[in-house]
Length: 245
Picture 1 (tube, rainbow, N blue to C red):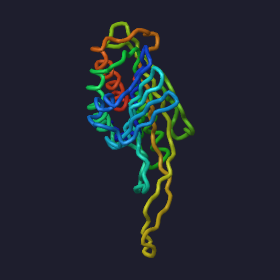
Picture 2 (cartoon, rainbow, N blue to C red; picture 1 turned 180 degrees about the vertical axis):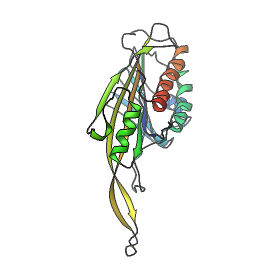
Picture 3 (cartoon, rainbow, N blue to C red; picture 1 turned 90 degrees about the vertical axis):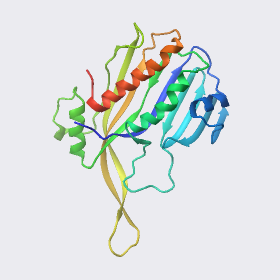
Picture 4 (spheres, rainbow, N blue to C red; picture 1 turned 90 degrees about the horizontal axis):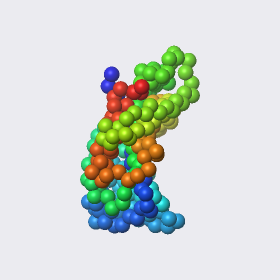
């Protein structure tokens, strides 16, 4: 069964063996832009940001951690049926990956851990439909969807890496059903712009696929892109097949 996921956000975190220092050249290497729309520096944190790829694209660092994040922009006018997102999955990932993979090939700091963490939402009109979809996706759930309320399941099914011998990958998925309140345009024949709030639902999938913290030495730079692609492929598999035992 094919699932039409909306991508709420994407994050790639890189953990170094030393303090991560970013520069304008770092931003240009990632985005191709000569300068960002915003730059903030203070409190030990350095962040570059621009509106691109269907959302807010950030490159930030604090201490030994570097984050690349694509998140929804704040809208002054919210469209009808709007759920905050950066696009459809996997199209949003393809845009993100086009910038991130080349950036990893020319990093200026060593990386000893990597985490890939997108958040996906499967919008559905009715609560029961959302729980039926959840049950079809999560093999660990064996209860009837008719009786389900407030389900939150977080589970790690670790597996061996195919990119680096002896490396364990944590495959963490968090599954839930969320309720959303959206604004709908209503034509009543009298008012030119009447709106009504409507409740809708969605299966929410938070992914955190990462290299195990027991690996304490920097990866060979030639392995960074293969590791990244392995983590993204695991996420693609979860979105297509659900929970992988």
